[in-house]
Figure (tube, rainbow, N blue to C red):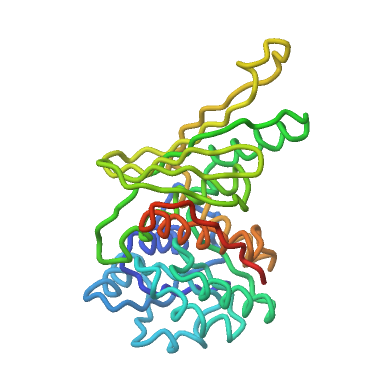
Length: 305
């Protein structure tokens, strides 16, 4: 049995994971019989008591460190990414696998420091946005893989996701990770630079790769997720096999897939994403934020471990 504990349990993700792991979500009955949510820590009044009463999360910790000898994996679900590194670090140092919700961290150097620590200790990490695990995002990733296998170039793309610019949990960084973790797994983790400007209804981006640009649209007034991938088929009628892809993305299976990702990592000890893939979205988000403030193109740092 793998015992898991929640850190910063205020958001709904802790509820969803607790329901799945403790047998309250009948749609996944039997999938997680070897995982149990046993501990919780939050600074918000009543949150831990709710997890105990509704889902049987028995131990309410007074500090994260109180969980160290009671769990086999930690799940950081605090809404504010500025708290993620300090919550996760003691568990990584103790050799305990950690899932860190989006954003992995808000600070670039903290992300690199955590990833290096986990790598050096051989500790599996998971986390970031659930959007990269959605079936529709995975379909878009496979579409790009097929294009490259057939040597069909990408001439551009579009990614759309919501944003919340004004909140107490890190402002732009609170929700912005979803767009990053659609764009980077689909088009590539290492675009060169980004430009960004606030609009009446969100933030507009140009994300520059070596051979093409992707338009990004953060929407403050809509809650849609979508990716579009463009090929040269409209420019060259002699290539009828070339196709574009327009892929709406839903959250229907997002949290189930996230729970499955946690379960597979605990059972096998193998990470489904590299340390670099987990933290590169932090570099992307910081470049976007700098571009919003400077009005200029901003280079996207490569997370070198």
